[in-house]
Amino acid sequence: MKKYFYVFVFFFCVSIFTRTVNGYELYAADPITVGNSTVTSNASIAMSSSDYLVTAGDIYTLAFAVNGNVVSYAIPVDASYRIRVANITTINVAGNTFLRLKQRVEELVTQNYPMSGVQFALTSPAAFKVVVDGEVKETAIKQAWALSRLSDVIAGTLTDYASTRDIVITDENGKKSTYDIFKASRFGDLSQNPYVRPGDRVTVARMNRKVTVRGAVERPGTYELLEGENLKCLVEYYGGGLTARADTNRMELSRASDHTDPAGEILYLNGTAIASDYALVCYDTLNIPTYAELKPVMFIEGALSSATGTSLDASTRIPVVFETGENYGTLVRRNKDRFSPTADMKNAYILRGGKPIPIDINQMLYDASYYGNEIVQPNDTLIIPFRQYFVSVAGAVARPGRYPYIPDRTWEYYIGLAGGFVNEKNSGKAITIRDMKGKKMRKTDPITPETTITASANSFTYYFGLYAPVITTVLSAVSTTVTILIATKNMR
Image (tube, rainbow, N blue to C red; front, top):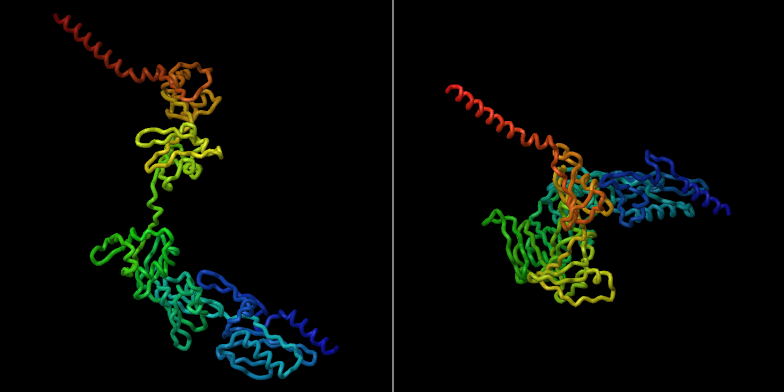
């Protein structure tokens, strides 16, 4: 029983062991900036990773019980990678993972102190510096830890001309290894995206060719090609292959520049270009269309929700692709979100060959049992009239124009919309109101749709100012003439 009591005391002591050792708090997590991100060098993450390598700067904690007393040691790892295991021995831990080191240390202690309940843990993971140079914005010294990968330390440092296919890591012993980040990110080959180590120098090479593929491939994007890789490789390997409806007979290759035409050119390729592995140059852009782009087109025009412009009665015209044999019932339901709230569905019609064909859109949209038999034809135009009515305001107002009709509003409301009377021209709020048929209305009559309100220019001062110069000139001329006649008469 005494033996079990000692073991219990030992584990209790270990569980509350959080004091500071050599300036480090056990199980502390230190923030480290890697690339553009801040990560945490967390001891728990390190100990849960089977590939965490023992690193110079790590601090470990060894604890065990001897004759009922808890003994603990802080074990730092320096650049020699040789550590002292209690008072037992010194071992070389270079190249060991944490799990391997833990196994070795606990075996050594158990051999010397049986039933000691030995515990070995990582207290504080090391942080170190890595130099990044080559085709980067500027040579940088990046902070990292033993679980930082190559992609982490180069993030945010590359120029537009940097290669991700040719990156060299030179370790502290001078050994050089080349890596391809593309293979790691695309295929999950983490051997091409290794963990960095203390003393590493990362050198990024300049890319040779970057090309872009767009359109009907599974993975459109910009890719860096290796030597010997061309159109076939771009489409099938990088682009992931053609999609089901790819039209390889209408491919367009935009070439930024070449020795014959520095301004660039567009080359039209067909399927044989893929089979023959057509040669590509840097900054080429390949566009592969689909057969869907060859579908017939009709047009919808009028009161559509996508209408632009400042006028409230602005109309718009949009092309709509449809399937051969599609009827108007299907097409209208598929495009119902395009119709404006002001659309007059009841009076819509199809314009085909200059002739109107009436069509009941309301029935198509709201009658589930309705099946239209009118087939959509190429270049048809479906006209959607406006249901919105307007009132016209003209004459001596600040902003003559057409304004939306709102029921139960007086003439004064529409004069207000037009900016009010121009007082220099209009006096006494003199107006003329006529309905859509031209019949004159009184001010007290309800304003109806398509009414025209005209503010009269009846101001005396306005007309006086307008004609006074003419009258003055005429009177002056008459006065001068009379004076001459009298003077002539007196001379006789």
